[in-house]
Length: 206
Image 1 (cartoon, rainbow, N blue to C red):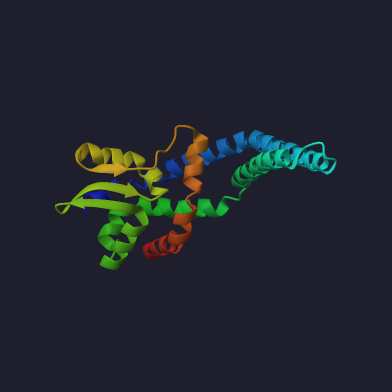
Image 2 (tube, one colour):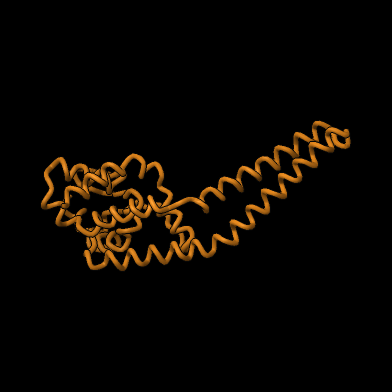
């Protein structure tokens, strides 16, 4: 596993990476304003269409079949818009705290691997790696948990250049800053299940 811990980045780069994430967030917020306004307008429009549909059904202007067809369409569009709105209007402060702790770990991987006990190294591996493929007692492929796949993206490229047979399986981080941000702050399942583990590892640093 020693080659794996070469992927840690220098602590001096931590602040630069943090600034990059903050820039991505600022860009996301700025562009979200228009989308939020459009979504709210879309919800209001579809709700008005639903009201008109109910009135038309009551006056028998339309048949129950037509009502069912269009009510399902409007309800689906309202739900999709509300789901998207919930993402855009969410308070991401807890996510940033989680990412900050992950950055602390990512910037000290090499030191932690030497300092930690076997149990602590095992927990560190659980926090960082989603899956590790081994063949003939040799690591062949690695998949990192978010947000480590983003935080360590440059380091994994360097490792691959040194060990070309070692593949890194990653979530495809898209090119736009909005998509990158959503990938960073939306690993809800990982965060909810690993937050205590990340917290424990950071405490072990002190």
